[in-house]
Image 1 (cartoon, one colour):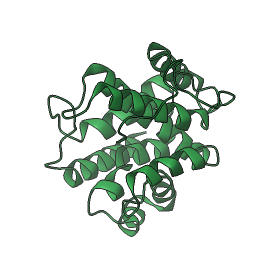
Image 2 (cartoon, one colour; image 1 turned 180 degrees about the vertical axis):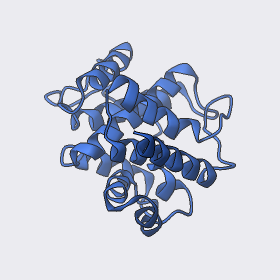
Image 3 (cartoon, helix red, strand yellow; image 1 turned 45 degrees about the vertical axis):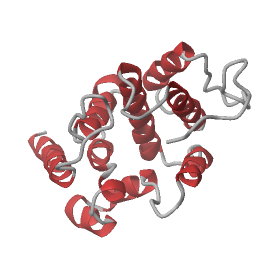
Length: 199
């Protein structure tokens, strides 16, 4: 148990160093590291996840996408299994934002079990942050559009973690949304017109 705790703390320290100086988009501009730590906490506390690979990947999930970290660096430091999960949840920043979002929806259902867990917890943490406070420069419609898109991603991850899915469903219902895959348009009634700005 001690070695697992040490491995988890090593991932947390690595992520904290890589994300140093970065801030979240919330009104307070909180340190970015709060996000991966929050994702790992959701997995462990709410999802009951004890898989060290999943928890390490949660802490490291944005390092390749948002810092100078490479996949090879992660594999050398944390092993091939952690690298594989992080690679699955990493967007290609070389693509336009709309295409990255489309691919997240398209690839959700085919994700590995470990990546599905990280994706669910990531969405849950982000949506709770949005519920707590609107990011600087975001309109209410942009927030709603993010919720709509997240509902589409989560629809492809159903059957992964009942506790996390239930928490997400409550957030979607507050916004008049559904993450039921049988619902082709997860927007509330009267919102079928053009979507607002996306992230």
